[in-house]
Length: 217
Image 1 (cartoon, rainbow, N blue to C red):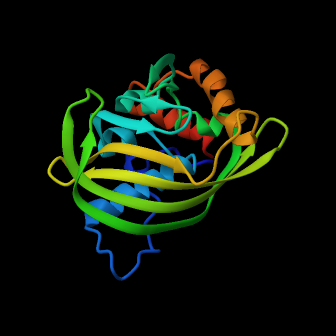
Image 2: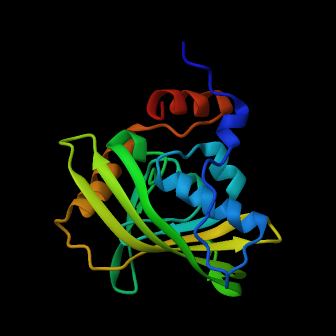
Image 3: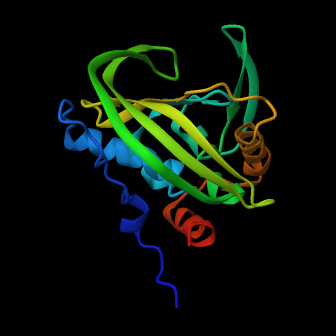
């Protein structure tokens, strides 16, 4: 019989960064934030973790998506706009939707390469802010549920950790190579944008636990 998902499990970060050069010293909070980001990419995210670790106006952005608050990290909505001459696609469900579209989501390599205290950042409401910038060299593998296709992604993840608020104010995913529009990783993002809207954001702990039970076990 499967053990019920506990409140503690919903809030517990499963990853802890271990690949950190001697020249970089992270605080316990910064380590938790790196671990949280790894959890999210590994399809181990919960709304509880997102609420614990991200400010309400936190920003997540990659080549295909920009989420301008923490709910968009877990709920489902697609919006198109232009910024700096590029199409920016806000795909809500980038992380909580991953277990729906992937069979496995595995981190092959993660190394904290630098820490920049008091770096400039921008919140979701476009208000300038200062936060500690953590750069992570990141190699990750996605395996689709549909067709079993596999794709590896090489990126630099940039985490802006606010020590005062104790939360992440911005998360950026910067691929190390160009991603063609017809590539598998592009297809994954687009598939996530299609499938995730069918998912309802967990409104309470019970629904959060139900999602873990259904998609992560």
